[in-house]
Length: 580
Image (cartoon, rainbow, N blue to C red; front, side):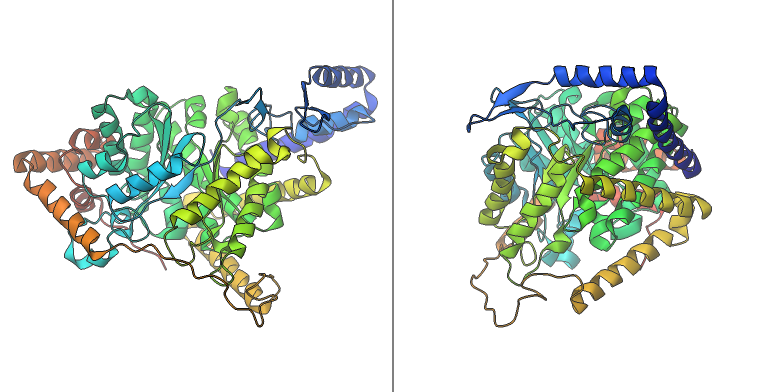
């Protein structure tokens, strides 16, 4: 499927809305049908009494004077849970009704530091601060680049900025006690994601969990890595191929697990504007859709198995970014790809507050920035939500900062009435509507430009994505430097201020790092060398013949370590050439 087809589907849908509005101005029967349908929705509204004794409906619906307004509202937004999912993919989302939510709270706090034991302890702390057990894992640079913790060249990188994982035993330790059906675990890892996911799934089975009930996500977004982070282990083509191996395998054997999470967050962190983030991320998502279709997978299966990951920043566009993205996706899946399963049309998304908006100077102001970014995110009703810790500019988050980040979400969900008491209470406001339409048009304009360059993969090869992101990043920095982009306490109201608080830093001691080295060496020494050799040979044969590499990885992951898996496949596929 080309981006031209997706553009056409969205353009046609826009024309259909305008035709529906025009018809509602002239056709009496159509007017009557619309008014009747609208009245039925209003009549079905449930009401609640607030602690202040005010009676309100569970869903905010606008009051219209003419059926044409109804036609436009239904076409542009739909009701919560209804096409084109501009408001929400779920009818009640964050509402608390009779002390219960229709869906578990979306809080998912990022954590990872030092050793598997240290991060496991942090996970235990996090789940005590929230209602549902939703974890998100950060890995250190060695792990992200497929390097072993016992590699002497990278000793000082062990456990810095994320958890160090090299062996199957490390995964068992990291997630000990979390192999339960009510736990969802996200892993932010790309190059070695197949090994990590295989270890996670095998560990779940070893602990007695049914694969069909394992919940969570692996990021595994090679297209995003090529755009922004450079943390691929193999060239882009093979990286996409093996990611789709995992995607196909999990669709059959681990149906609640999302093995690919299409990420715009890192594109934004690299410097992209909100609209670039939205357009480039969707374009990457359609690459995976097309790859899966070429394997013979059903579009309804594909649509239900491909979640996304976006930023919520301080810019105005974030007031409606996810809503706009959902509509473009829904129209494309239904009208261009032919997905007739409603769940396949619904774009599921994790949202994280912007790390780029956090500053070391007047560091406690980051708490306010994160809270406001969370508010923007919640107006878009995401399915998972991570709030950054205020101390991230200088350290791996401390426990105090993590508690504040988690509590900020709890305050919004459980104290503030805007999300627990009424759905969509600001969703069709004039400001959101304006942003919504401009974002949709901006996404489609980028699609047109990418299509003229020969499609997404060709545009990547030509450096288009990186050039656009680089230019926007430079512009952002210039705006901060000039004061055009105001940062309170940094380039605005900053004169004469003194830091009022010293922020503690999380340190990974040399003792922890040396223990990591010893643990990995001990694991390698205790294995059967013949099993390891046979496993690596089997993996390379599968890669050379085009077989499903993930299936083989599942079979060998208990013996073959992360670095051995990486080197074995690099001998077949080659290494990714990092772009500058």
